[in-house]
Every structure is written in C-alpha cells, then in structure tokens.
Amino acid sequence: MTAKQRAARAKFKAVVAEAKKLRKKNPKLTQAQAVKQAFAISYSKKRAGVGAVKKKAAPTKVKAKKSKPTSDMHKDTKSHNVNIRVISGFKKIGNLEEINKGDILVCSWGYDQTNVDFYYVVKKTGLGVSIIPMSSKIKDYDHDRGTVIPGEPNYGQKPMNRKIKKYSGGLYVKINSFSTARKWDGRPQYFSTYA
Image (cartoon, rainbow, N blue to C red; front, side, top):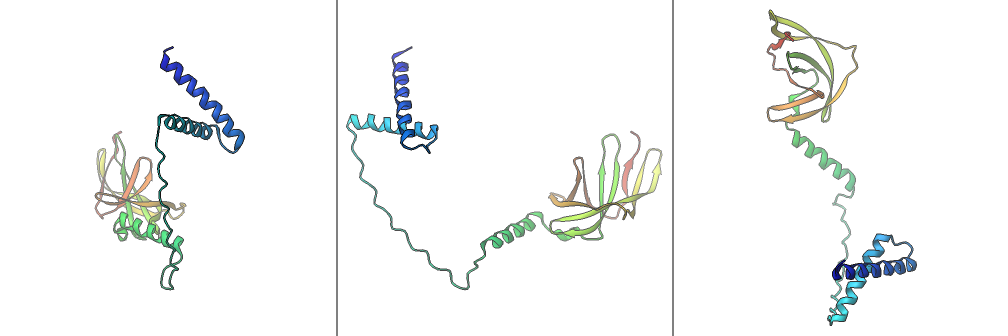
C-alpha cells in the first residue's frame, strides 16, 4: 500500500467516525447523509488549517409580497392545465375531422400474403374511436389475388376503443401489434392468398 493510499484510508476512517457522531446527535440522518456531512467537515478543517479566509455572508434578499389575484384572473389552475393538455393534444394530432362516426377504416397487413380487414366507426370519443369489424366482399379475383371492398358491419361484435394517431400521410388507428387502419378512400383494396 502506498503512502497516499494509507492517508486516504486514514481519512476515510476519520470520516466514518465523524459520521457516527453526527448520527448520534441526529438519528434522523441516513448513513449516506452523515458521511456526506462528515466529508464536508473534514474538508473545511483541512482548508481552515491552511489559512483559508472566511467568506463574508451574502446579503439576504427580501422576498417580494405576492399580489392578490384580481377577480378577472383565472383561479382554477388544475382544470386550466388539463384544458391546455387536451388542446395541445388536438393540435399534435391534426385534423380530427378526417375520421368520424360512420366512416370505414381499412387495414392491410401480412407477410407472405396481403390480408385486408375493414372496420366501421361506431362512435368518436375525443382523441379516439370505437370500431367494429366488417365483412369483406371480393370484387375481382384472379388465381391467388384480387381486390376486396367492405361488406356489412358486424354489430354483434363488442366495439374496440382505439386512439387516433398521426403519421406523415394522415391519421391512423392501431388495431393490434402488427396492423393499423386508415380511413378507406372508396377504392377496392388489393389482397392475395398464395401463402
């Protein structure tokens, strides 16, 4: 062990002893807080012995009295904050009028084949929608591919609540971990069955 290591070890033992004294005086201190204060004390003793000059106390600032709110100021800060978040949420999403009650959403997904699902918007709620699945009608079919259009909504299904999200091409609704739906543009959708 080098001389510096022995000195550091001795200093640490002195700090731990000082921390024990501090904890006896104030049992509410944690060990970490006591050690931190003990290190501060040891450094201040070291500096005081070298001839450190005491600093003058900084002048205390007088706190300004808070003015009483006038009658025209908004007092309910909690609901005000909520309104700000909701408004900023609408701004981030964009034009929510793109998806409304009665609209049809289309979801195209798949790896080896392209599956197409349609959803009917039953209800619009703030930043989200309630949707139910729809049947599909094959419009054109050639061997293992074709086009499909939406059929009838399946009103027997329990509605799924989903949030409306934004991407560079517009708005979408996340259906599950592997598929999203966008507003249907009225054109037949391509599908394939060759998997």
